[in-house]
Amino acid sequence: MYNIKDIKKDTPVNGDLVIKSINKMNLEDMDDASIREIVAVVNLIEKEWSEKFVRMEMGIPGLPPATTGINAQINALKKGVASLYPPIDGIKSLKEEASDFVKLFMNINVSPTGCIPSVGSMEGTYSAFLAACNLQEGKDTILFIDPGFPVQKQQMQVMGGKYESFDVFNYRGEKLKEKLEEYLKKGNISAIVYSNPNNPSWICFTEEELKIIGDLSMKYDVIIFEDLAYFAMDFRKDLYTPGKAPYQSSVANYTNRYVLFISGSKIFSYAGERIAVMAISDFLYDREYPNLEKRFSCKTFGNTIVYKILYALSSGTSHSAQEALSAMFKAANDGDFDFVNDIRDYENKAKIMKKLFTENGFKIVYQMDGDTPVGDGFYFTVFYPGMTGGELLFNLLCYGISAITLKNTGSERQGLRICVSHVDYNQFEDLEKRLKRFNSDFS
Image (cartoon, rainbow, N blue to C red; front, side, top):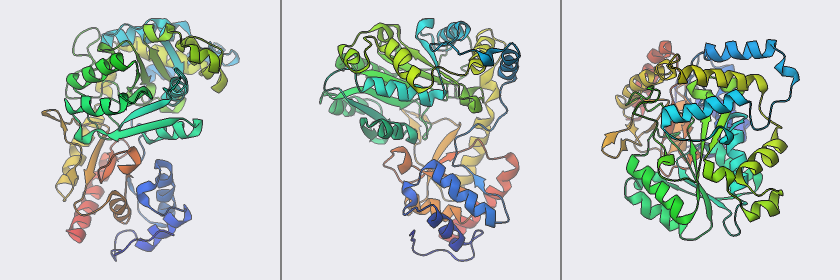
């Protein structure tokens, strides 16, 4: 049974209703509640509450899907692709456009062979994690640079894989090298995982930090899994300049041992079709690992991913969704689709919402990238003095506001992740009123 001391009386949402809903989900500590469990709790509360929650717990697109993708997918279906199994390694046009996209927006060369579609980046990371845990004897552990996307650790749990992690909060800049080597010197780390821009903190690694990660990848022979779900969404610079700097920052400039995960979910608002691409470096794709042959009867990293793991998981990725992603990449590559400008709405919302929180007693948790303030985008992080993340979440639920705790993401800091995408502009007035009331009640 969930228990919390000092429930405020006469809150917009009755505290007893909140507790009843939490208990129905069998949650004992809101700090440990998963994203989907919080979604379920809020759904239960909303059934009995007369108003609408300001929902910030779920990282899903809040914009319409790109029409370029929709039209291409419809045309593909009309041509009959639904009756055809897609190539497991991807249709030719997608592989070529993905390779061009990586070159034009990152200035990185990855051959079309290494550009592999997956059923969302979730399938891509699962496949890569499974391969990475079986590359070399004794190297069976993945290192997460936290905070991060909680479900990636759940993937490790499901496959029975080993992982370690640390919160990067106190290890920015040169400190990152010492902290990483603390783990890498043990010799059991096969791969390092992080997102850039980061979910949930929205920090972006500096070039100094990316070089540190890349150099250590080479020194200790570990693979870097760079999750680019929020590709080009560091809105502090204009990253829609095909073939011209500035480019999306990447560790791929500093190592040849990498896999880049580029999803259509956020940058093209195409989450519902579950479509993404893994860009595996040419060196890594063709690299042979004797241990892979023992485990999967396949020597090379790339072929193990494609013809053993992806084949077993889903036998390929939706044919029509591949056509959609191919068309969106092509339009962006040709300069006909400024996808970055289309998603700047997240930057605008974040600026407004940050102001509402900080004017009402909240503080930002992850604030800086080196000497530069963290940008405004899909997420930001807050804490309220004197409250743990779990306490803050519970109390905000009583005011019709939802989010997820930072503990959920591997952070050691107290606080919440705020997702701006599904908060409508017409909800800002309600959000401001509820935050003012919250601050008045607790200050």
